[in-house]
Image 1 (cartoon, one colour):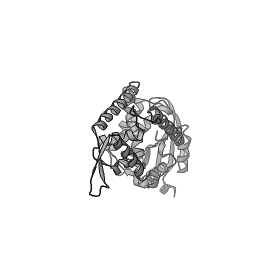
Image 2: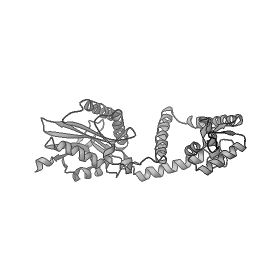
Image 3: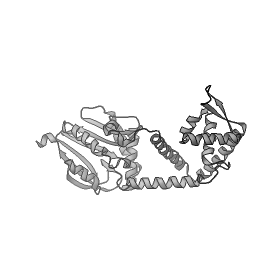
Image 4: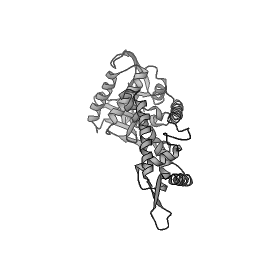
Length: 327
């Protein structure tokens, strides 16, 4: 099988789910209360204590940036914590307009109390999860918070960057695992495929990648922040004068972005310049994928049950004559 997109999980559903999880997380961690972490301080003040403790001597303007607060709000928080005897400030310049922040002994004691409270809270929750689920949680939250931080830092979002700037040609470290993961997650839900299928994708892709670069073979990757989110490959056979289109998959987060169509266009241009025919195999019932293929000149040429992927499914073969051979 060669192309699958997570069409059964609309992007709108993902957005709504993440918003709901975020609201619940805020409530369960206590951010809706007047005080946080058994400290008698508001959530923003608690975070100020934590950040100053992590970076003694941090300047007020940098603290504002870390806390995502405006200058006046940060000044009020600093003044309040100073009045409570929890922090002190030291002037950096002669005019006293720039200063560094430090926790007092009382502030350090309070920070330790906050740390104990937070550690107990998280530890208690983690005990209810299996070790594998704990690691998956850490990785997922890291990806999500990093993505939010990049947006808040003003970096250009994906839709403001050209697709071609994100596409890389050839093997890139980590791409085999990313592509195999995309396939495995989709197929486990779509067809109940398991480790047999994932291993087959990974081993065949690794063998293919070892032959690169090649005059008749190519691999294109759509990469964001070091992760492959979409891929496509052409595996050419000079003897048969045909090209096999393989490992064409696009993550659900890219649905409707044009990434899939651009990757297909690059692959077909490559194949048309070298071979008379391009073919692919896919599963029956993937109507969105079929529409994309047919709009690019592919026609259904064969259909049969197959079990090479560890489970019996109906496979379909689509073929397309190159643009040169059609003229």
